[in-house]
Length: 225
Image (cartoon, rainbow, N blue to C red; front, side, top):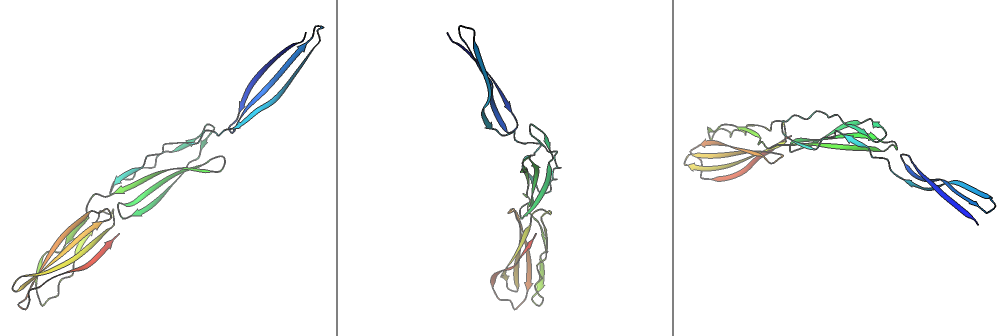
């Protein structure tokens, strides 16, 4: 009679990039009625499966934020990066984009280079908004005779050093009285976020030769960045 006994022992081995399943020993033994027997064993790799190491994890990356005009920019945070094998050197950089509304957008970037030479980055965007209208001061109302030249438009305007802005100036002339023409000069300062401030100056021109009239014209459009 022939008896056969077989048993198997399976182990696994892995590294950062591949997963192996190995049949370490496959043994069979046979014997007959006379006590004779034979045995054999062998080792072989059954399979190999490629796997990816754990991805690089960034710690300390801040969220995107929106600041009001004039608010302080946050300090640079401490950012680190690592995977299951080592820590990585993090390189930080900054790019500033100038915009009409708020003045600027700041893009902060943190970069590491992995073992394959690939650059991996994370970003934060800091945006500024402006909810305050421009400051505008114009010349006071004045009265002149028709023999004098019409005063040039004078004003002072600013936007707190944040957004860019434009100043539009227009004039309308009316004669409400027999010997007087009224010039209504309008100033409007508008910033890049759409906030605006308007002021009016009246110039009274006296003359017996004036005739009834009414007219409107745009004097200038000035832009400040």
